[in-house]
Image 1 (cartoon, rainbow, N blue to C red):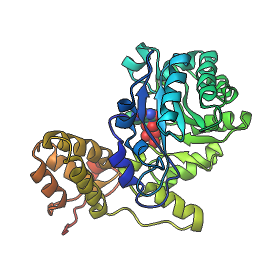
Image 2 (image 1 turned 30 degrees about the horizontal axis):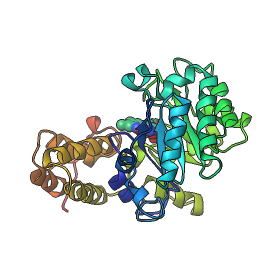
Image 3 (image 1 turned 60 degrees about the horizontal axis):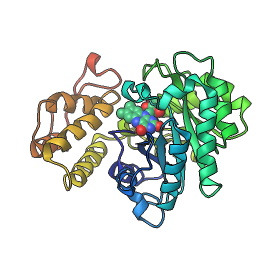
Image 4 (image 1 turned 60 degrees about the vertical axis):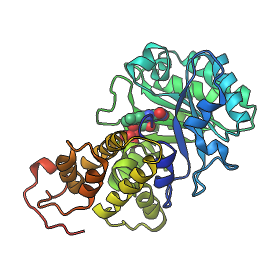
Length: 330
Ligand SMILES: Cc1cc2nc3c(=O)[nH]c(=O)nc-3n(C[C@H](O)[C@H](O)[C@H](O)COP(=O)(O)O)c2cc1C
């Protein structure tokens, strides 16, 4: 996820079981063949013999663009640098990206989706899998199926479907039932994505889409144990306990310690706030800590504030409406 999940985050989130593979932030391709440093920046794992996190979970490199030839040239470059999986982004809703004809803007024309996937699949020539990620459309869902079929016809090995249109942005709900419509018409694996924050969401997304496999985005930041929770349930039918605050705090602290090696403290604090912000919607203590630390810009007090006792923690679900407090001692 652009600006949110880098190699450090991938490493931290794959330390426990659950994830089968991960994807880099997108490498944006306009018309030129990009130099190796761009690929290494997005995917430092290319420097390792297996392009994987330290726990051995594969990392696929994501490309975003609209020019089939330029994408093919960059796919070739990525493969030469060692990429073992290439993913194509047809989902990005950002205005600047769409204005320059990238991401979800291609969903207005299935033929263009086909040309991009086919060009990259040709460049890969079977050496590495080429996959694609789409939304249900740009402004509406009329071309949802046609775009998915175009990606399959172009040679995508699997398709991730974020169950919203571009214009729906990240607003709930995700229309998981639309993924089922697509899945029924495709022979490649279809993976459901969008608004899977909890095990319950997984159950619901799975039953409405028919997809056993899902892609987790913000949900993994909100609950770093979500993939493990889902995997454990798949294996045993049992539910793991809620992720404790101390576990969330430990992952934030590890993240800060790693980022601090290359970034100024202020930037590390804003990255921590960004991650804590994802946690707070789903966790009362994260919400309380966020409220307490939102104006803090110094790293050491911020980290201390993640661990220090706080006087009052609202109970679950809707922190704003919490009625009771509990004593915390860490
Ligand atoms: C900050 C942010 C950055 C994202 N960057 C990417 C990206 O680089 N590539 C991509 O395929 N999707 C990207 N996405 C979309 C997510 O992968 C995912 O499709 C979307 O957030 C819906 O899933 P979720 O509800 O599980 O987060 C991004 C989303 C967010 C919020």
